[in-house]
Every structure is written in C-alpha cells, then in structure tokens.
Image (cartoon, rainbow, N blue to C red; front, side, top):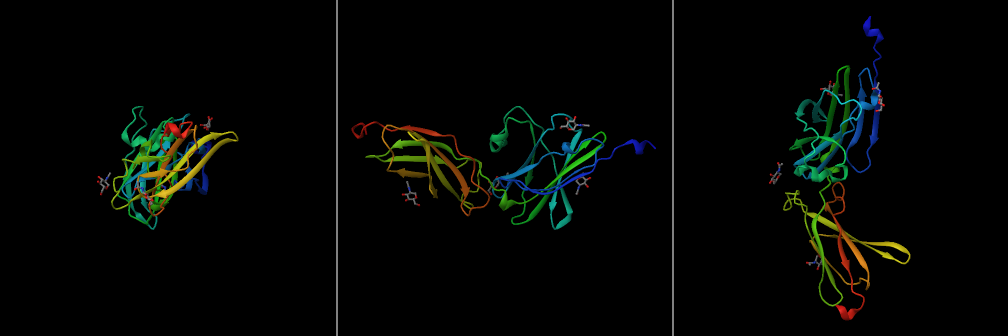
Length: 254
Ligand SMILES: *[C@@H]1O[C@H](CO)[C@@H](O)[C@H](O)[C@H]1NC(C)=O
Ligand SMILES: *[C@@H]1O[C@H](CO)[C@@H](O)[C@H](O)[C@H]1NC(C)=O
Ligand SMILES: *[C@@H]1O[C@H](CO)[C@@H](O)[C@H](O)[C@H]1NC(C)=O
Ligand SMILES: *[C@@H]1O[C@H](CO)[C@@H](O)[C@H](O)[C@H]1NC(C)=O
C-alpha cells in the first residue's frame, strides 16, 4: 500500500534540437518520485576528430544524485552497450577542461568516449541514480555533427613591410590528427569607429597566417582566429584569445 503513496513521476521530452550542434536531445525520462528537472542536461562534443569525444553535464544544484550510470550504443545496434566511467567535477583545471572553457564556471561531470565509429549514430544514456529512483537523459549524435575544435593559440600580429601586417597563429594543440584531418581558419578583426564597433571576417585559410594590407592608421585592432575542420564537419571553434595591434598615426612611423 505504501507504493500507492509514492507519486511516480514520468516525464518525457522528445527531440529537442540543441543549438550549436552538440547533439540531439533525444529523450529525457524521469522515473523518480521527485523531480523531472533533475535529469542531467548532457552535451557532447568531439574536440579531436575522430578520437576524442567528451560528454558533460552539470551537477544538479539542489539534489546531487548518489551516482551516475553512463552507457552508449550505436543507435541501430541497441544490443551492443558500452559503459563510460565519469569523472567528477574538480576545481583543478585539467587539460581536458580547455575544451570546456566557456562553461568552466559550472561544476561539470564529464565522460570521455573512446574510438567511436565514423558516420554512425550513437545514443548516450546518462542516468542519475537518486535514493528514490532514477532519471535518464538520452542524447543522440553522429561524430561528424558534433566536431568543434579547441581555439587556435598563440595569435600574434606584427608589422610586415610597407603598410602590411601579418597575423599568425598555431593550430589548437589538442587537434592531434592534423595530417589526416587538416583544419581551416577564419580570422576576425574588430575596431572602434566613430559609428561604433566594426568587424571584418576573413577566410577560410588553410595556412596559419594571413597578410593584411588595408588597415587604417591610428586605430586599435583586435584579431581573433577560429579553427574548423577542412571539410566543414561540425562547427568552428570558439574564437581564440585576441591579439592587439595599435596601428601608427602616420605612415612615416612605419
Ligand atoms: C524540483 O526542482 C526544483 C528546481 O530545480 C527545486 O527547487 C525543487 O525543490 C525540486 N523539488 C523536489 C521535490 O525535489
Ligand atoms: C588520437 O589519434 C592520434 C593519431 O592517430 C594519436 O596520436 C592520439 O594519441 C589519439 N588520442 C587518443 C586519445 O586516442
Ligand atoms: C538508460 O540507462 C539506465 C541505467 O542503466 C537504464 O535503466 C535505462 O533503461 C536506460 N534507458 C534507455 C532508454 O536505454
Ligand atoms: C596562405 O594561403 C593563401 C591562399 O591559400 C595565400 O594567398 C597566402 O599567401 C598564404 N600565406 C602564407 C604566409 O603563406
């Protein structure tokens, strides 16, 4: 009879497309006697195609679960289930956290999925286990859709010759298959004009430098670079940290 007093809560959210290509939010189920919102919100990203895929989700602030069970399987082979061992949120910034810099303020659990097959639909099931029940989040993706490199590093801009300037950068160090899966780069520069902020986007470029000829005099420019898979898989990385350039006020200063 006690079972009758339990309010068993079953909530389903179908097919929400997550903007930013971090996987298709397939299904959220909650079978706890508590709260549907306690299903973890999972995002997945491939920061090194094809072999480094990371899924992450924030620790629910109100009621942390006892533990998580993470499994993944090919969508069309539901029998072949693999398990993933999650890493708890930690205050120390590990190397893998570089790919999550935009969300590093939050306490994130993470799971590395090794060696996924190319052009294959996967389903990842992150289940939070509570004393009173479980709460699962299913997310589905194909590796090619969730590619997002880490940003390029070491962006510099220097005077080249005449009124020409050279912007240079290094590929993201985490992208370790550069020979097999080259990157292309987009360059953005911004400055303040009388009419407000202005920006110019250049590229894509396959090499790691670009010469600029038409910068105005006496301005402060900010240059940033993003990296994208050469074939256009997934999306461009976040913008790199900016490099600054003060152009001189007169050409005689060049
Ligand atoms: C349900 O979740 C909300 C927001 O996360 C929280 O404020 C509330 O206390 C939760 N209720 C239960 C019964 O856990
Ligand atoms: C990914 O592949 C590259 C090149 O094949 C290799 O150097 C690297 O160690 C691999 N990384 C992982 C995490 O498997
Ligand atoms: C997700 O994983 C949990 C825990 O292993 C399991 O109980 C549940 O049935 C799984 N959900 C689906 C839809 O496979
Ligand atoms: C980079 O590539 C572009 C076109 O692909 C070329 O015009 C440019 O000269 C190259 N820059 C360097 C520094 O090699």
